[in-house]
Image (cartoon, rainbow, N blue to C red):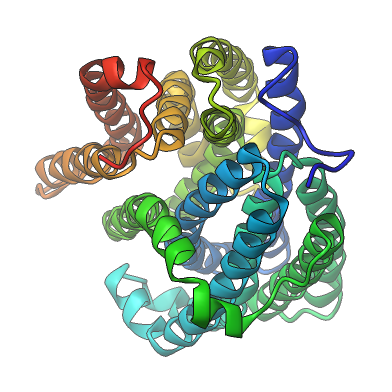
Length: 454
């Protein structure tokens, strides 16, 4: 069922539809990143560097779980996009109900697991005693609300699959505003510290989940939750979602898991260094937003056109999407390089924290363009249902190469912090190179419009 806010990738101007679809995703991802960043800004200014370090470590761990479900939502996106492109309204509604119900069950289950294993995750990250108690409080509350993040991300995937990227943005805009107000009220006014920012985040995520549920129900003319249908007839849809999404989810989760070990290496240095690196990582997430968003767009673009039997548009689309993603990423990279000090100081004004953050941001800014190539290429391959091999290649680059580099450079008598900065672009470059080789190997089949798991 097409709505007024839907973008139909199977007809019309390609670059216009790509930009129209991607812009709300960029802005939506920007707002989603503000959840943790506002937490960091508030605690960094009102509760000090220990609280900021606690939120940094907690954010790395929670991001691992969130990344898994972001990856899983790729399966939802591709499955719903193909049904939408095919044009069978009743089949589309059935897949929407199964996908949403399945995400609800996953969210509740992982919230329970997260609460249970919070201490073990913090120990794995090598959390320092100075801020362990605050990190435990923050992470446990955050993971208790993980179900809302899981459900919302899948709901946003459903909305984007039918060409509606504006509604997720509108929802996130409202939820982010609520989050900021609650952050300031609970932490800045009531002085609840990390407890306040964690509660603010969970409340705003719960709001976004309710609004997404209502938007899907109105747009598709159906209810979203049906456990009976999931049990009776949902197996084929769940298998399709898992077949595509599990590989992307595992890839994202394992990369997030490897970030925990990067954090463990980071904890070899001072608390101020942990805080500075955490700030640089948050700025990194903002700069790569265009790349990630155009990658999401590419998956929907490919899936819709394959469902409609229009493979010739895919070839033109990937070229135009790649060019636009690179241009946007380069602009952001220049801006963040020039204004690195101001960006870092916004989170915490202590000179040692700022110095570390600025040094890392400027190293990353030189290589962000590689991320643009990687994300668009991943989105393109996933649109064809090819997610397993890209997953393996991404794990080799982002985990294998990066961890070998860190082990070789930091397990020394006098480890240097610059190697923490360098491990990220090294991982990006390795992954992108491997993906390009794989693309060249399967290009012949893709040019024929063959959509199949790898």
